[in-house]
Length: 441
Ligand SMILES: [Zn+2]
Image 1 (spheres, rainbow, N blue to C red):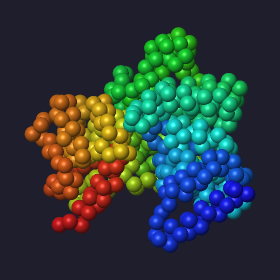
Image 2: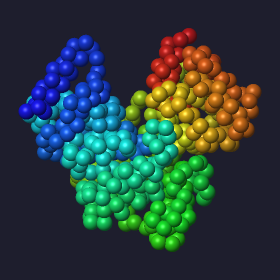
Image 3: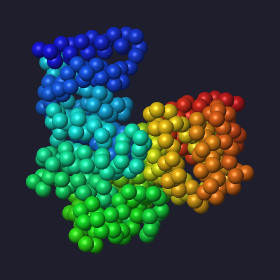
Image 4: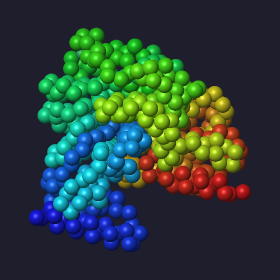
């Protein structure tokens, strides 16, 4: 009875918020969870629940899975806005359930923060968990990567649902061994892409075998510690692959899985990994590949995640980067592009970013390809400028600003190509400022 009143109260509150023109965000979930931490038990779900977790790529993968299902004519409920902690997911459920807690959809698809998987799914059914990658991220909030992985590993010991794992990340593939009785493990793999390297180019985590501590051997690295690895001692890494991406063509922006050709709107290896996970996940539900082809050919996030714009004749690519790997993935794309270009890097150190910005020293700014100027901005705009200078970039070609508007104005004094990297709290202000330049004469 108590839960009935909580749901009723939250629904009324949601209506009140709407009237005031406010978007609830995590708010409803926060109140409900404080009221009863076991409220997840109240919901009655009669469809598969799918969750995506990772350090990087959760929002994109979650939304692309949802989009494939929608393209196939399915009704989904999803936290597309990215509220991915227990309170955010609870808010989504509270808004979509009936007063008796029934949720009607064909699929529930959630992105879940790495640290909250065990919290959300303690009392809530989970049919498929997709895990993409683990990197160092905002250390002062998440703690070390290893403790996060162990938390999820503990949760998985009793889990028997589908587990879709990136077999090219040693931190992820190991989770397939958490419960030896789980028969529903599905590994995905991406074949060597044209810019893969023989040595690790960027900072990464997975240097040693998690089972026998032997140094892992890599056939190649795609980016960071993601690549084809095996343990020479115990054979870890040689898993049976469920979905394998082949024939990646960056110019045509195509790849193949099971001899089906996918044409997408990006040439980033990072997105190809996300989409491989999407295809592996949707294949488990027998979604026809024609819907996957159609959905992925159109899919774009348009919220500053590898978003492409043209501002005053200058092609512009904006990407969120809240950790070294996110930044390195953006710089990789920049370096794979031989055209002359300029870079804007915006770095804030607000609470949601983490106050510790020492991670910028793990970004690989060496040998930038045909970059004629770098502009920096944000509350730590000077720190990132010093980092870039230390990497050997000509300091006469670096401009540092505290004021974002000035930085963006300077960026668009010519029409050469722009790459923009912004961290968490700086992303939307940067994007807004860039869109403003569109109308500025
Ligand atoms: Zn080993």
